[in-house]
Length: 147
Ligand SMILES: [Zn+2]
Ligand SMILES: [Zn+2]
Ligand SMILES: [Zn+2]
Image 1 (cartoon, rainbow, N blue to C red):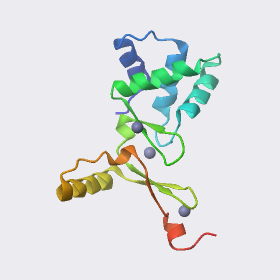
Image 2: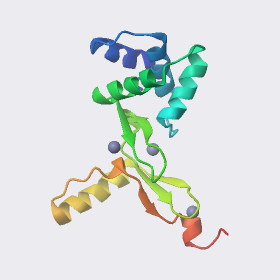
Image 3: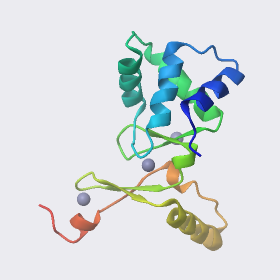
Image 4: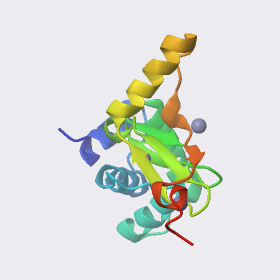
């Protein structure tokens, strides 16, 4: 069962937010973006295109914050670039960013959890691994296959 735009809208409504076209458009963009890595600016652009009206950028950002506060959305930091958003159901994978070519590789949630478990066993530290991307070399760059 995927989180739907209606579910996001209902959650905002339950938290006391008035449901404007802008907020609804943000919810629709977020609910439709499963395997993408959208920044707040990307979400703003899509929501503006979808609603067909002028949108206040701060409204879009506050809506994202409200969805995060409700636990339905999570952000991840991607190296030097902007943070990206995932629905909670899509989060949990580790981002691996190549320092040479900039490619993002994802480590699936299960592997990511194994890595976190290894850190916990060794140190007792409970890591929020997927909050920040790991930097390194992608398989191609590491094997010298690219220029
Ligand atoms: Zn991701
Ligand atoms: Zn953060
Ligand atoms: Zn690379």
